[in-house]
Image (cartoon, rainbow, N blue to C red):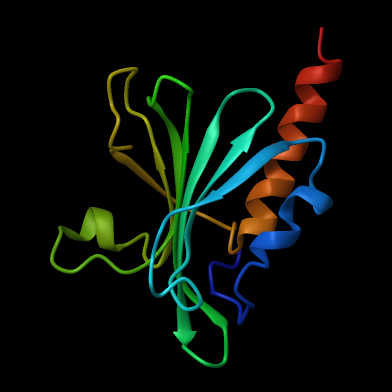
Length: 144
């Protein structure tokens, strides 16, 4: 079985994303936020016109270790593709909290923009999510 234990990871180096993923990323836009260092919010625009709305929260504000994150992937029409999250739900039923803290939200149907299906996730950083996107891009390029 996969290990769903969260690793101790650094916050994302947002300014280097385009240099690391030039094949995927068209631009990165910061949302205005006074706490950008400990709670950055930004949008990654991809070459395929999809985008990833990102929010990270530092576990130790001056230590810059990644605490919680919300990476939500959307089509250009703002419809949800899927969500990659690391946070605890407070109070919902056990069928939701059983997937905490690192989990995915998948669509139940085309109109589901909340991602009402919850699954365990092994994606524990933005780097891992972007490498997953790179793999999808590779497969799409060569499948017949």
